Image (cartoon, rainbow, N blue to C red; front, side, top):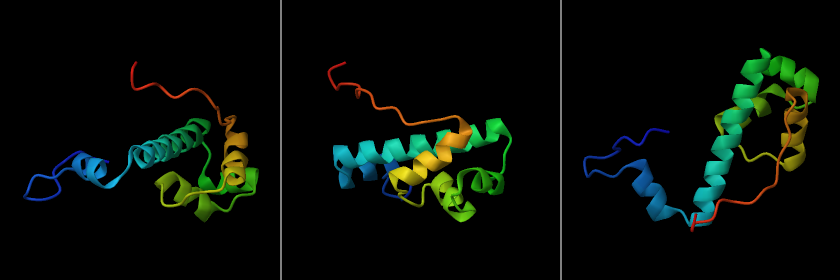
Length: 100
């Protein structure tokens, strides 16, 4: 999403996120965006359509589309079903600390 100004008052999306969202909500949002981008990129790299991914994963194409657009909060098992045919999985690791 662009950091362009969204009102004549000079508020940007970054300003809005900082004001309205807690640090935890911002982190969750960033994670969803990263997953959405990775899913879309992985599918493109494999050269498969959403319909083909449906056939490979058993997850309906409209759900895959919503996952790629970020307009849904899929269950973990749905994410894993979609990632497996793409040769991807989830990784649990340490978050970068605020102290560096």
